[in-house]
Image (cartoon, rainbow, N blue to C red):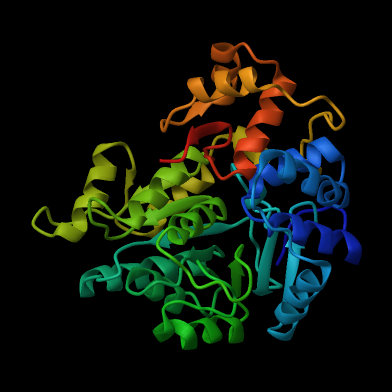
Length: 376
């Protein structure tokens, strides 16, 4: 997949260490980054983890090198590869979202331009009119050299993929590459690959998608895209989650208006009331994306080295009192880390260490970059 210049390529041993670290229980993208920052490399973090886990009384399990090698080999048998966020093949827009996956499984799509991408999402129980509108949008966007991104779900997603097979489409999976969902769209996934499109997932091989995995998938759909189009969506739906994530990621949000009498139009109409751009055709999307604020060009000219703060490895761990102060400052409502530092009076290094520990214990969750909350 066409990406940006520069970037390094992980050695085989580095790739295995990265994979072992991100597949460790309770290590998500934010914790991965913190561990890399503290220890200087994934291999060093793997060495330090047993001590950290033991001190916390956590049950987090670290996969073995053999397990990591088996996953890489299994992905290669499917025709895929594992791409790191520091490598040039990593989707360039994706690396700028909060919690970008350090490693991404990718199959196909070698010649797609991932700097010209539009996500199309909507209802699984889409109407005939909604699917027709989706096909028209996807075809016209494809003719304008945009790659269509969606989530391979029934309804609007599937219609978007099918209509853009000839011009380029990417399907983001909620499960592992060998666990395509729904089963009915397995032939569509193969059609995408046969036409030069791509499949992506951050989940390990063998992972059966669960309800909580679909919002995670949705943040990648929006993160891969310059803008998100909502065709049909109920008032409480995954498509509206995708639109909200797109706004948090500084992406454009478009919506197709619908009849107030159709529940499938409630979500899109609500988005328009809240400021999403009303569209009646692909020309509206193309015009908006061509007039994007020039500051957004930073997305297209990135520094390919991730920002890593100075390491804190070897420092004495904070005490019980400091941990209690942090827990008292936390709640189930996400708050910025800077606010926690001010409220608790903790130093930056103590805050990083304590949050890392709570993350490894599975007690906190991250959202929108530096927002953190206790798990409900």
